[in-house]
Image (cartoon, rainbow, N blue to C red; front, top):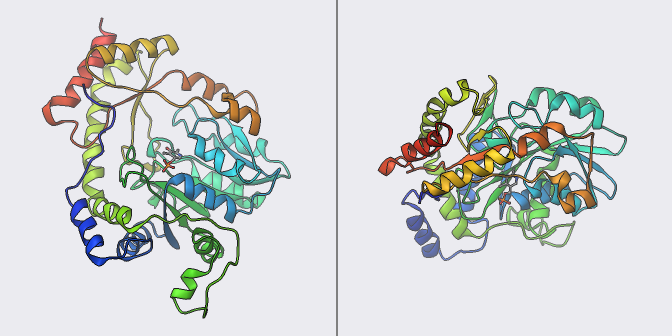
Length: 377
Ligand SMILES: *Cc1c(COP(=O)(O)O)cnc(C)c1O
């Protein structure tokens, strides 16, 4: 069976972990965390990078930094992972779901303004599949209406928009290092602080609401409880693992891109024959091959394709149940219109296996053959 995902290990993770062990400092913000922070800062150009337990945690920090109060509205797609919405709902915010673009499955920037009310506080673009949202337009709308932009760049490491790394464009950006993403630490994430005004408070929120970081920099003579916060920082073992992955980020991205391109070329005839639609990458986007998906005719065909692939030894999956139609989404959020594109496309999307090493033992060819045999039956 070809698994849908297989976490790639560079081979250097255990060495780094043994070094963290040897250093005898296992709590957060040690040697390896600093290494990851500088990698992220130099790579993305963000003002400050802070490792977190997950992208979910980074989004929660962003919601606190944005000072979301009960009744505040946050514009986002319904076609996303639950954490995009949950982080704001935890603070009493109301997710306002806007439809997606049919080409990229990203928030449709042309519909954002119609969703803005006096209660709107932020826009959360989700860069689906590591392919950027139309950020120039989104930033201009936010600017004009004095809204924050919090990028859900969970899938966006090593991808960019007009040469700007994803997560470093909005006021705040959130990354994931979950084992299903491109660069991993099991569970893990980071908050990228781009707007200077959030830099100091972000450190405090992450350190249980204390000014511990300032204390260690010698800026205050004792540390105390100064703000809201929680424990959002990972320990050094996680950071040690992640640092090994960051060292190989270029090679990992190159390998994934090569696999993605082979799928893309192989499925062109199926698209020409009208059986599937392949992913579209708009000109301003440099993507990271986070995902390869196909859009098929309808839900029945998707179900049939996934079980056909299963019978050929290929594990393919689908996502997401749109948040506006899920029980908690209905309770806590509201939709701006009917979201026809979200509803239509979410039933038709199939994700294929894509992981470093998939081409060993002709794995990629097996997936391609299995897909072709379904349509050429
Ligand atoms: C994976 C993912 C998340 C959550 O990331 P975690 O690190 O698992 O918390 C959030 N948003 C999107 C779009 C994701 O793909």
